[in-house]
Image (tube, rainbow, N blue to C red; front, side, top):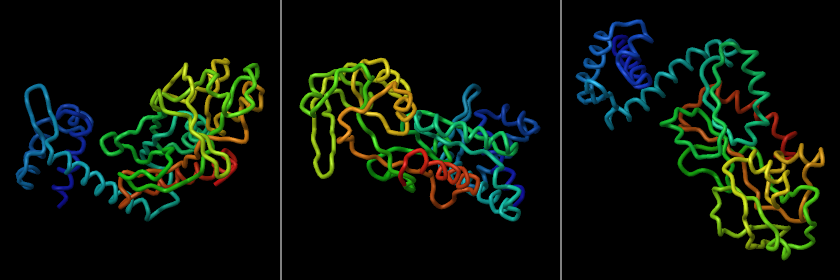
Amino acid sequence: MNNKLNAIATFLRVAEAGSFSAAARQSGMKQSAVSQQIASLEEDLGVVLLHRTTRVMALTEQGERYRRDMQLLLEAMREAERRLNPADHQWQGRVHVQLPSGLGQIFLPHLLALQKMNAGLHLMLSLDDRIADLVSEGVDVALRLSNEPPQAHAARVLARIETALFAAPGFKPVDSVSELAAHPHVRFSGIELEAPLRLVSGNETIDVKVNTVFRANNSEALLQALESGIGIGGMQRPLAARALQSGRLVPVLPAYRLPDRFLYAVYPDARFIPQRVRSIIGVIEQLLPEITGNI
């Protein structure tokens, strides 16, 4: 069994490194020994795990499926060992976290402090607003904003995030929803250009056709566009908080807001979530009441 576990570990190292030679260097093995372990594993399984040429190595379909399953298996074994001494291992190991760009900037100082205090922790942060493939990109947990729970993966709601309309203080005042169409707007580029702006107030929902003059794919660019006076736009309240306090932004039609979205912790596989991943989410959950003002 030990030989097979070693071979599986070598296979995972080869898959991650992208070549036999790189895996051999990382593990301190001879390249011939790495090749022999992979060949023995393939013979034992009765399938080809890797396509090999003189220049390129690639996982077969069966190889990719086996890689995913074995990665979970070995991680579960390591986690079982760490749980024997949970206090010593809570903040040890690699954690790849994907965060929305805007909220990620708010969480970042706290996560950096956590990293600084725990030398055994190896954080990898991806701050962007796209939907990553959690499995192929090796993401341990993603924080995603959505109107409803993600369907493809296990998810848990962490907070409700309100989005309201804002503009620079020198922008022409807007007194009614009907006036919005006459003003330039700043919007996220993931929204269709001709899509109406949906607003809610109590039980009332209104769709407004607006003139979008600036679009961007991340919150920081949208925030700067609003502060520069380009137009009116929706912004998550936590992201607009500092600009509001400093007077760089003012609310527009405060009785209305965009439909609420929820912040979800999304996991690639609910069958096994390492304790260090749960602990990272625990830290973020402790910050959310102050950041959002609600749960």
